[in-house]
Length: 250
Image (cartoon, rainbow, N blue to C red; front, side, top):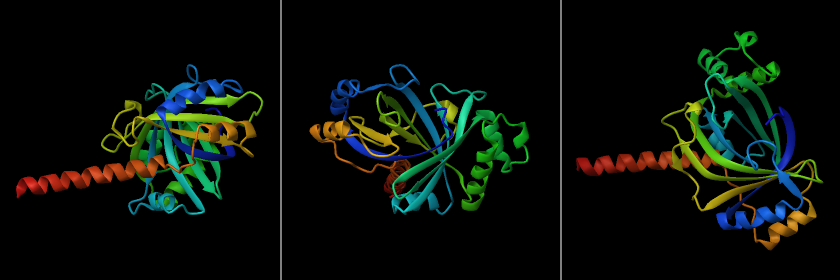
């Protein structure tokens, strides 16, 4: 969580929960629990942004060669005076670049409400330059808060490959009626609770031992956009609600 700028490959898999449970003992032979959380477990709540014409959604859904997202993220039990992260996530030719600054959550909300960086010197920032980049991106795309995505994560770090991380995300939920990240994980499940999103994150290439392990357990690569899947679910729910009201009126 402490890294502010990094670049890596991220490969996603959608696997059954029972396969996740079987994989963990094998991973612990060559990996350790992430230093954050207990046994690598922690909760993530992210506020994603989009433009009125859904530029971010369509860039992601159409898998443009270059695409990017803006999000405000907190970990575990967040408070309004606690730490948060404003983050720009970019993807180009399958390489993920992330740039983020640590910021007090109340300062993040103040920035979003003011729409200007004029107050930046008064903020508790770890990297002021990244807030300027956030502001440029937000202004260029006319971005506003759009949806909350939350999930539990268990993360592992390589013992011998320092750049290797493997994460498992489950209990994936979303909401768009309450966009306060400090209110924690709540909403509708946008991925079957019996499924887990696994991500292998590495600077260069996935080690052979892990490739063989994933093949043995028949883990197939599958692109899963938490942002797009959440948007799809919320819009489907609204359409269903409209259809139900129309039926009642008839």
